[in-house]
Image (cartoon, rainbow, N blue to C red):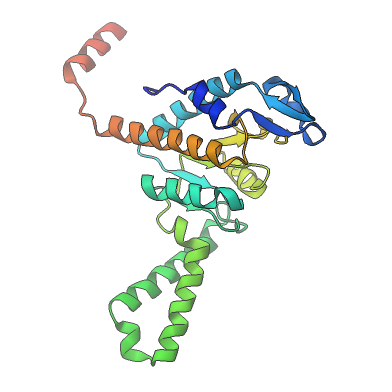
Length: 247
């Protein structure tokens, strides 16, 4: 990972503020620094360490040409998650997680195909030639509704490289389905989360807009870095030298 995580940026963004001590998850103990005014304070040195590991994995994943599904259905993260996904051209879920989005791909694919067919017919005028204005309006409403449900995953590959979740406690079904399929999970883990369920847990505040925006910027950089690596031409001389050294 070329870009190092700045602990001062995390501090200024409030990434160290955890939940009330009464809401903590015992498995988050290794990542907690102290208590203050009835709330836990997250150890930002651990945050930096875990975030850099997670970003390196995301970079490797995109360098291999794989997609990262961005998940953030919580109200305060909705726009941040969608912007991150759109700027990196990654699939996303920012509305309610529909059961089977990953594990029941056959049913989901049928619905997505129907959506794409309707969009194509609407764009090429096929619907306009067959139906009146009221019927066309109803078709448009169906398209709009389906795009709310499936728009973010219309172009998702059959096999994902990873799932990035802003709040695994909020999106438990995403965690369950990714785990069932063996898809690596990167997630922000506040003090109420269970980090043992996450492949790459990142201990930090998962409510503050500044923190969420900062983490999203790091993830964006990691995705772009991975893609740039994938585009970089292979140096044949270096490749031959590496092979020779291996022998």
